Length: 350
Ligand code: V47
Image 1 (tube, protein in one colour):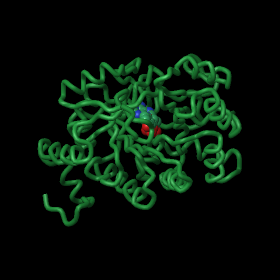
Image 2 (cartoon, protein in one colour):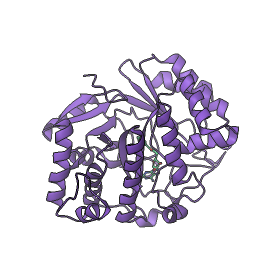
Image 3 (cartoon, protein in one colour):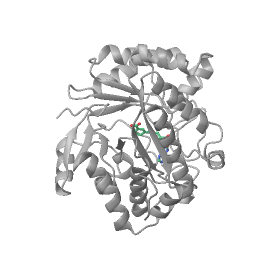
Image 4 (tube, helix red, strand yellow):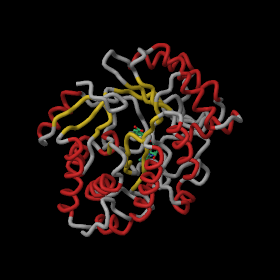
């Protein structure tokens, strides 16, 4: 494949996507090894999902419920969140990931209180990565204050970073079909732009393997590359494979392991300015995630401690997601990798 500059353009990426798998793997692996050798990054984290009651009706989502819907809907008050947090926390944890839903009855003060409460009960060194751009958007709309003000206040309360959820696929015609009523692609990008400007680093995601095409995926990644060029605030890109159980797109089924690996490789080659590519094991499964390390990924996310339900409710093979460090070390070693524990900002801890 001929390259005009050091950076692949849309047409070159389309060509690479269907290149010989071995050739694609070798290119992405070389890129990954030049950056990190054979290291697999991970952290010790847990999630808090305060509620799954959501005003949005994204067609790929198996997690959302209406208020009061039983069985299945939950909403935690502050005391319950405190109790849950203390139950999941142990002294090795370095990150709490808080994400839930756009709840019809919760206001900005509630979301602020969660951050201040968690900040108050956990050591200062534990990073709080909380609220996707979609939730931030809702806080701004419901409180009538700007995104900048919402993020500034949350930062003062103790927020350290934003997770990457809500990106889905940026193409408007796809969005119209899978999540018509939620935060637009432009607004998602704007919220991340503002976060970066305020010194809040973020992750970014892409939900793939539903009704979108490879063209849509590449266009999506190129938008992220463009924003990163401007701000430099993204830490990691997470390609999220659509899981098909219990949602209204179920008939589509799921993409093959080969398509997952190709997508991960293409993301490493496209996003030359985003430091990390995360293989999110609760969704891909542990074995596929380790295999993804040969295709350009370098990060496994964390130990999770059985604290997220988004993927198990969508039928992912990890029904009770826990990754013990010894298990990860064994899996990595058996594939010729070694592991490095990192904090939320990729500083190596051990
Ligand atoms: O935006 C929802 C996805 C995302 C399904 O930043 C689904 O470190 C697959 O963004 N099949 C939220 N995916 C989760 C998220 C995330 C996860 C892990 C780490 C980080 C990070 C962020 O989950 C949603 C959506 O794209 N999702 N339903 C489903 N059926």
